[in-house]
Amino acid sequence: MTLYNRAFAASIKNTFSIEPIKDFVEHYLSTNLVKKPIIIDPFVGSSRYGTLTNDVDKNVDAMYNLDAEVFLDMLLEDDVKADVVLYDPPSNVKQCGFYTGVKDRIRPLVKPDGLVLSFGGSSMGVGKKFGDYEEILLVTHGGVFNDTICVAQRKDSIYV
Image (cartoon, rainbow, N blue to C red; front, side, top):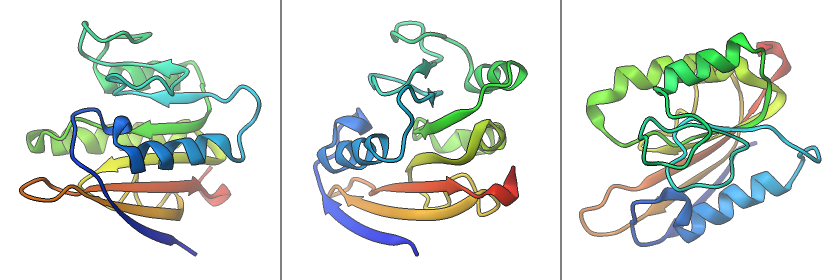
């Protein structure tokens, strides 16, 4: 059963600094994880939750500064399996087709019963052929700012 929540917070550039979103992330990272979880963040920005981090911006302090698809392909080739993937792509509408390719790469990287936490303008997460939607949090920002939709999706073993 999917839990639906709503919160209000001012919009700021760094998604994980927005209080209800930060609480959402920290809740899922603190529950049901192994001692040393593998947390993939292909668009790390200023976030510090990931253990395998990437950002195409070379000015960002990340383990890798690659295109997200190249980074995820590298992890797939190395047979990395994540406990959690943080999927918070830039909100550039022109890149929508690009994000589909990223989602296609994320799904096989997640361990059975692992999580994808998605953030953006869609409640689709990484797709219905991945697993159960545990929670959808709608964070309204007021005024002319678009809401941020946060999705916690757990991988179902039938999609391994």
